[in-house]
Length: 242
Ligand SMILES: [Zn+2]
Image 1 (tube, helix red, strand yellow):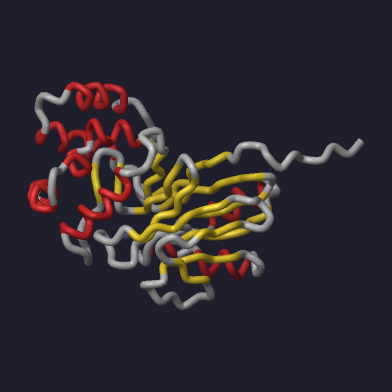
Image 2 (tube, helix red, strand yellow):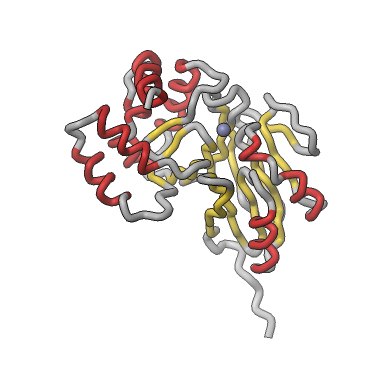
């Protein structure tokens, strides 16, 4: 008997580890997959083939090698895969460029994402939003934020303000597992923050700390809590000094 797969099943999002502490996020819906920031390809291909999934698209948040180096091999293996990347970068593989407020609709999986531009870590940086989640690459981390490789503290501050306007229940899928070290640093910034010490205790034994939730970041992330770009710049400076 053939039982059709219903199209409204909730999607599953899984982390695939890459390099030392990168996460490649894979969203699976109705047997189709969307892959976020494949810095490597081998483990992605292995996962796709083991689970018999059809890879529909790749979403790129920014140009750093640890987020894109797997793209060419994935295109070679899956010639029909669609690739979306920020308009402010030039990549040497085929892709469709995306910018602020673009809406991406995946034909097969029906997954839908809105693009927002969040420069700071790099100038090309974008995030992909669904109704209750965001893939934010290296802009916001668990209890931290990305280094300012290209942008200014003001740009990063404005980008973080954009993320702050999302629903407090928004799940945040970051590009790296930095949470525990970030919490240790944050505890030196906010010595009396009880939410932060509770988060530290809870995180100590967690292997994977992501996704995090915006409400938790609002309570504990000193970069998100900074009142202005100067404060953000000062906190960033102290963290880099570690
Ligand atoms: Zn990066």
